[in-house]
Amino acid sequence: MSSRAATEPLHVYEISDFKFHNGSTLPKLKLAYKILNPHNSKIAVVHTCFKGRLDTTLTHADGALKNHKIILIALLGNGESSSPSNTPNFPAQIEYMDCVSAQHSLLTTELGIKEVDVMLGFSMGGQMTYHWATSYPDFVKHAVIVCSSAKTSRHNYQFLEGPKAALQSAASPERGIRAFGKAYSAWLTSAEWFDEERYQEMGFQHLRDWDDVTTIQGYEGWTGDDLLAMLGMWQRGDVGRCTESRTEEDALKSIKAKVLLMPCATDQYFRPYVSEREVTRLSSGSLEIMPSIWGHIAGGGANAKDVEWMDHKIKLFLRGLA
Image 1 (cartoon, one colour):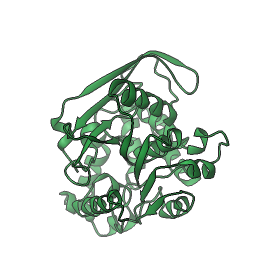
Image 2: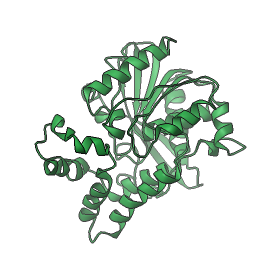
Image 3: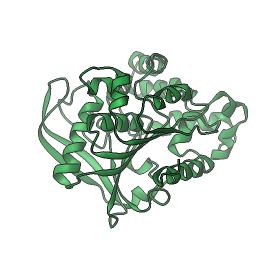
Image 4: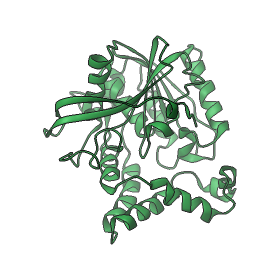
């Protein structure tokens, strides 16, 4: 995973009297972001994912996007941008459209950007990219969507109900966070990954060691309210809501950007067959299925082999060779 973001300064953009999709307002909304490769002219935008921070996000800043100025933006609800944990009266329900609206103001009003050469996102970041390309079809030239979908499936929605219930039913906030992590953990990778003890490649000798880090340390600094706000946004994800017809198919057809879809073959909740269906509805789409047993987290940079594979595919895509 790229560590470049950790060395770059944090920027915060403030928006006064921000109006959310549900009609509620905040006197001041904040977007946290970083700029990588600042001296380049071509613009790339990279989004954080669910439970993702700016400094843990795979950016390809030293690979496929090394010739781009990268604007790395934290999603609303992630604890860095405005969230229930850091903003009084922050709404419990937020939408991708809220993130797009705030980010559009950042990119155009604050940074003076008129066009984004490539927008990239993994998981919820991929859904953000889809919502961006649908909402502003002339603004994004290339979209790279990793382990994600244009609309959250019923299966994906129901999977999230498990960790959600574990969090909400716990006797204390601390137990709730632990229960959330436990309920989520087996979905991160794949059955094959567990069978082959691939956690050892991450430096863990035993499964219990991986479990302790994944379900306890991995949630340090997170609050239940932030997790629930982001989870709800994920569950309601649907690019059809960005169009007048309110259908996923019409939304996909409206996208003008060249789109690269990169699902993982063993992802348990953003399934590859969904990407196979979506690519047929895009006017300029290509599909590359990651041949990995690392499941969903393959797309987030969990192991070097998959990062190298993705980086190569993105380079080909941006050169017009994919």
